[in-house]
Picture 1 (cartoon, helix red, strand yellow):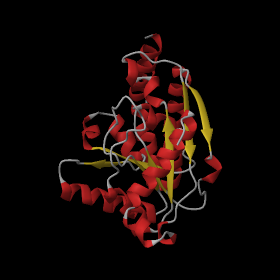
Picture 2 (cartoon, helix red, strand yellow):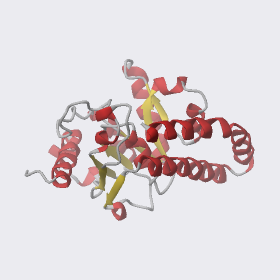
Picture 3 (cartoon, one colour):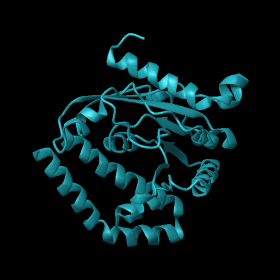
Picture 4 (cartoon, one colour):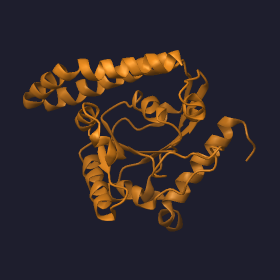
Length: 247
């Protein structure tokens, strides 16, 4: 419980103390937009690394060298915990906007940082608005800003992390329409950190593996047609491997 309280204090303090930083970042952005982008990224990553340290998580990262560094990518991950965002965003090598639910816009200060970091807000109840979000993500990738999305649409709450919700195929248009590679991200055991025993935070082992990038246009037609299922199977096989379970 102490870890939870410390992390709440850290997050609230960061958001309050960062109010003057918004003005500084805005001024930097007026004259040097690229400087503002990188400084905002590093500031938030620094805060997330503090959260990770306080959580005591025993983090293992595999395959980070597989992520292309010379172009924007579409990260596709399974989603079991709020910590999935913290753990993965702290490691993004460059500008990366996460696709979040539109309800996040209601959180003051946090939503401002998210906008600085090119996050996109998805209305899951409105198909037309959802399409607009996907189109915005495609344009961001074309501008060199990576995107991460959890295509299950929400956090999986099954007792078994291998029982994932179906991946929404529409999410993969970000890659097929922009031509960027897809990087599957398998996050193992993150729900044991927090969600499995709310509100306690337990220092458990978590593994993040970045799989080999996928170039959709190089895949056979059948795999291109069912890209979501194909990527989900890769993540599932990786989770089985990292959990020590047989295929």
